[in-house]
Length: 213
Length: 213
Image (cartoon, rainbow over all chains, first blue to last red; front, side):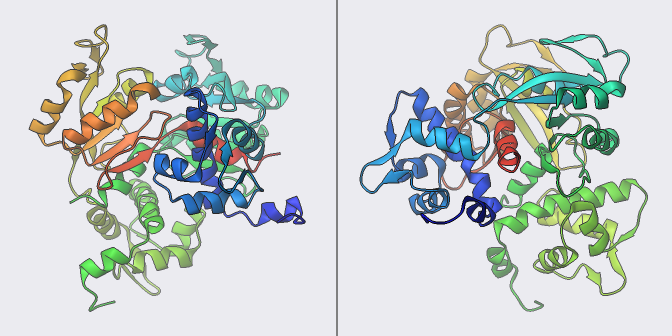
């Protein structure tokens, strides 16, 4: 592992492992809040319902973070995971759609210390434009492209109705957005270099009812 | 595939395949809304950014849904996927937490035709109990366990602060809940027979920033 080039390592990380890192980080931050200093793959595994071996294997893909028998230094591992996930900074985020979900997300305080800060909220509805939602004045989405490009924002959340989501996604991509969290219950098509994650509660619920009688 | 017992088939389905079925269903329902009757694994794949071969392979685990060259009958495939996902019925759902997110989810109209209907909204805050949120009167969460058990509800959403999420989860499990959609930004521990899916926008965002410069 020691002489492996960073670029080479990066290429070898399966996306499913990348998806687990934020869960590890969230659990470690929770331990930190509890005043804890050291943890183990066993304890982390028990909290997350993942095997200790899996956690050790995942982390070993990125380097050496703990020593056999002494466990992980929580603060250090948090710092390293934050670097790996590129959240050793704060990403400004735009929210498009000032309905129930968009407004709730714009006001959400859970992004603090997790790498993100909502900085703008847009809507196309004249009755919403220029109204106050939490700390934001809702901006006219027809001006979105220029404003986002000027501010060099890379991360956006789409919280508009399904019918409008693709059009909004196209505008965001043109404005230079690279990562989209999509709350609209529809698949959006974007160029391959743009990342999309879907939050559709029905999808998550259906994934569970499959297993229910 | 023909002589395989249903039970045997069920056991052999990887969870990652199960996770893709709701996406297939959502895309097919969209096509249905567009008035379409027939589709192909190619078209579905293009809409979803998944290979046609993957879709054919996934669906073949559950049976024969289309013929080589003639494609899939959209209505029939929707019906079959709904059966497989156990949403050929409507699951009543409770929401716990009447804050921004909980209220938005309780009012969300996107569950219609997707197998779910929010029927109750609970909160522990005296200033929220008995207030109106959309079509709901917020109920006192101290009475939750009895009410849920009596109504034989199996699906719940947790939208309370991280500090309260585990306690709420414990109560829900005691009340007979089998599937939990967790909006609280914390891992909740439940018995192995209970299903949990997390919706934490920070987790989803971090999964994307990993790939950004």
